[in-house]
Image 1 (cartoon, one colour):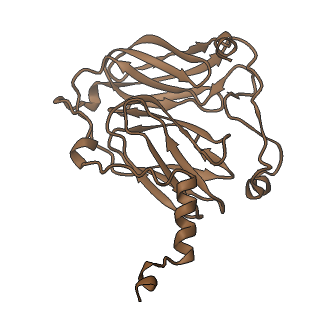
Image 2 (cartoon, helix red, strand yellow):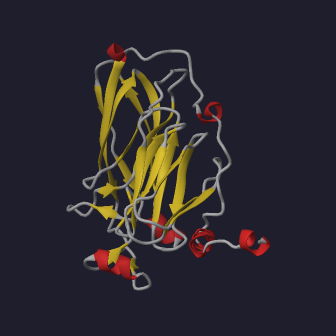
Image 3 (tube, one colour):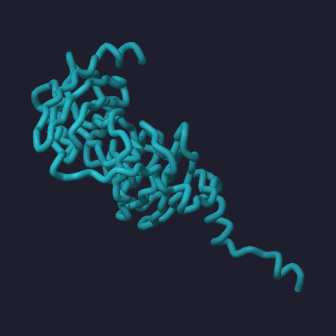
Length: 268
């Protein structure tokens, strides 16, 4: 009788082993709703006093080649690839200069405004053995829904400096995990410990004034209160560059960033 109570079903043992192998054993500590709430100000934004910011991000020379990805170790990834695969470090437009996947945000100058807290989640998908999107933004306390759309084992390993590190395994297709960040941080990298080429970055903000440049290098931040701001553009290999811009009520300002390709050479 005693030995029967001590036996564990084979399926349970297998699942435990899989989760441990991909880091699923590092469960997150519970986060209180109070800890997940962003630091709020006291002044509400008057829409009549706001303006818009738009611009482009370019590079000052030919971008380095993206590193080829070899998916041979996972047959499912190889089948999903449908042709040669490359890292997404340099998302260069057809003109050879415009740069996508650059996180642009208000770094300083907002003062003491209060913002509505978004409740809808931001989704980070694992599809075709890639993280989608590659670069994105989220608010402090906003749910991040991590989805495994592949019929293979993935894990999401967040490696922040200010927030809590987490490592969650998703061995089955359709699995979902929700995570929230408690403090602002630019940027938080993600990686998959199972598929070493998979990586992604998120900017965690207390305010809604951020954007990611598209394939043509364009970005837009709407509804900024009138004032003077420090705007920063961040790229995973080319570093950061900042500029100052003044927004007028119901006005529109243009701001263009140029990132230095030499920085990529210096860091490699």
